[in-house]
Length: 152
Image (tube, rainbow, N blue to C red; front, side, top):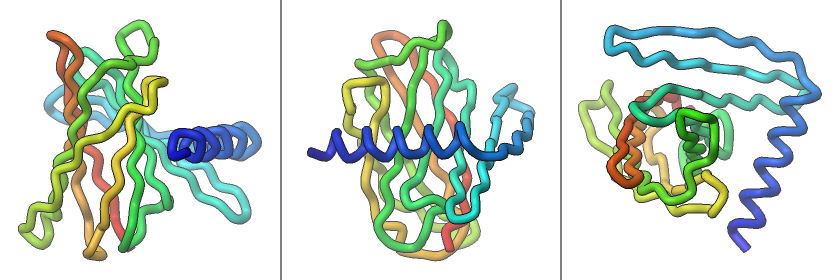
């Protein structure tokens, strides 16, 4: 049942993205990781997806609700290999913290949805900036990506 719900959300987000105006910006940091943040605006919905090169993988994260809000949150991670193919047999861990509060948050184990996406549910208790360190392992290949989000 949860997989169908997540699939429905992914389809709705895809349809929204295909029919909306987009603004994309790229940033690069000193570790060589490039992140792309795409923000899609419609009259009633804002959807943000972050895609990053993460070692042997490309990783995209999506939050529901989006933008993230204080309270229950579902984080969906899409993992692709260097060829752009979904990685269906990875272990995905998300380590969270709140840098401005000098606090660590929960460490999450994302469950496979069977299609190269992985989902974890958490409760974001504090309205502050959160850091999500997404760690991926599949066989001998590893990678990690850091995503920051302002929780309101």
